[in-house]
Amino acid sequence: MSDLLQRLRGRGWRMTSQRRVVAEVLDGDHVHLTADEVHARAARLLPEISRATVYNTLGELVSLGEVMEVSTDGRAKRYDPNAHRPHQHLVCSGCGTVRDVHPTGDPLADLPAEERFGFAVSEAEVTYRGLCPSCA
Amino acid sequence: MSDLLQRLRGRGWRMTSQRRVVAEVLDGDHVHLTADEVHARAARLLPEISRATVYNTLGELVSLGEVMEVSTDGRAKRYDPNAHRPHQHLVCSGCGTVRDVHPTGDPLADLPAEERFGFAVSEAEVTYRGLCPSCA
DNA sequence: TCCTACGATGGACGCAGTCCAAGTCAAGAA
DNA sequence: TTCTTGACTTGGACTGCGTCCATCGTAGGA
Ligand SMILES: [Mn+2]
Ligand SMILES: [Mn+2]
Ligand SMILES: [Zn+2]
Ligand SMILES: [Zn+2]
Image (cartoon, rainbow over all chains, first blue to last red; front, top):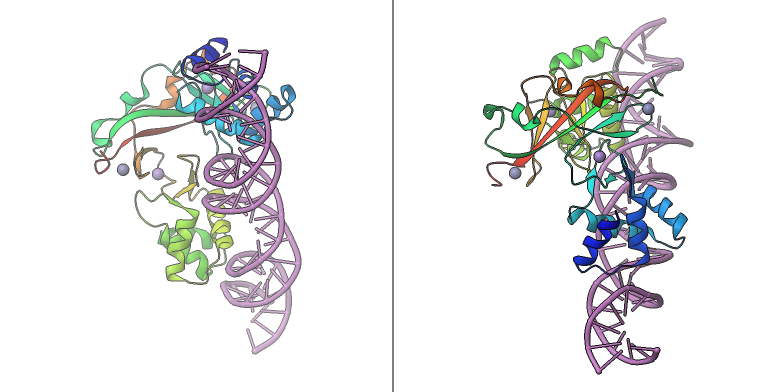
C-alpha cells in the first residue's frame, strides 16, 4: 500500500493525514471492511477523522480503480484493496467472513449467446456461500 | 401464481385481500421488483395497503421459499417469484433491468478444493453485467 | 352469529450513505 | 520562510430502505 500512496501522489492527490490513515487501514490480504469499520480503525490512529471523509476517500479510491466495492449481502458495502488481481468471494453464511477465491475457468464463458438477450455482457461476479470451519 | 395461493392456504395462511394482491403483482416472468415497486402496483389494486404489510408478506414468501431475494446492486432488494427453477441474473449497467439466465455447467464445480479454505460451500450466485440492447 | 388470534396499519425508529456550508491546511509561489 | 489559495475536512442535516410496535380490524372456526 506504500506504492498506493506513491500512485496517488502522482495523480495529484494532496497527502493528508486522513488519506494516509485510510490507506493504512486498508492494507492486507482478505480485507473486506465496511465503511464504518474503516472509520472505526482509522479513528484509532487519528481520532478526529470524520465519517464523511472516510466515505469521500473510499469513493475516490474506487473511481481510481484502487479499491473494489463488494456487496455480499443486502447490508453495508465492503471495500476491498485487492482490486488489481481479479477474483471472486467466498462468504460464510454464519459469521459473514469474506475470503478471496480464484475459480478455474472464465465464468463469462458459461453464458451461451442465446442466454444473453442481446446484451453486451462484460462482467461476471460470483459469490460462493457456505459455512466456515469455525461456524460448521 | 394461483397455485401459489393454494399452497399458502394449505400452509394455514389466512387469505386476506392484501396477500392476494401482493401475489398477483408478483405474477410473471423476469419479474424482479423492489418492495416499493410491489407496494406501488399493489396500491393500484387496493389503495389502502400499507408498506409494512408488503414487507411482511414478502418476508413470509421468502422464508417459505416461494420468492427469492435478489441484491443486484447496493440499493433496494428485488423480489423474484421464479424461486423454483434455479437461475442466475443478467443486469443492465445502464438502466438496471434484470433478466433470468441459465448458464451451462455448475458454477460450484469451478471452485477447487484448495480454494475453499475448509468451508462447506453450498451455493454459488452469479451476476452478469453489461449493456442491454436499448442502452448500448 | 360470535369470538379471537392472526394479520393490517401508520408512524416512529435505525442503519447506510449523501450533501452542504463553513472552516482548515497542503503545497506551490515568491 | 511566509503567503496564498483552492482542495480537503468536518459535523450535522437529510434521504432511502427497511424494521418495529401499539393498536385496530377481520378471516375463519365454533
Ligand atoms: Mn476480495
Ligand atoms: Mn430471477
Ligand atoms: Zn463463519
Ligand atoms: Zn439498459
